[in-house]
Image 1: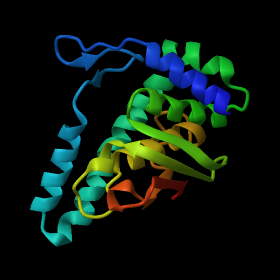
Image 2: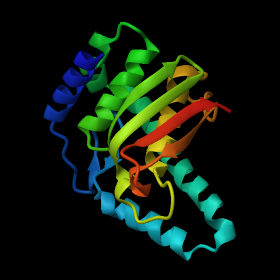
Image 3: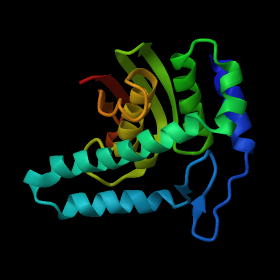
Length: 193
């Protein structure tokens, strides 16, 4: 599926997205903010450093949840948008598998994460490998790919759980490797709860 990925990345990278007067991008039939990555990382770093040790797991779960909620609702808008239909859907021959492949190609094109699926067992498990992602430059202690964890769970829910919005929280994503802790890449594993 390298051809599909390359085609999607090149096609979506050509799409001009511009923020309106409020800093929102009304593309993909959803509103997305155009904000610097450092804002997300600085927020995560500060909130985790200020928290007592016994609250860190709860805060990390909250950061993942925020990315998940955004990814689930925004993701539905993206994969049902005209742009996604025009660029990705004509190449879909394997249903949900190709839609997920297209989604990770879109993540790359939009600068969210240079990532792709390295293992996929439909409806059961997905392994994502990312060589760059929002949180990879984070100064948090430990694995901190909160955004890609949430997005990966959200997109797997959209692909294999009950139709939107009833499929929320069917799957869970854990990070097993991270650039932020010295690994060569981040690895994210999605499985059923």
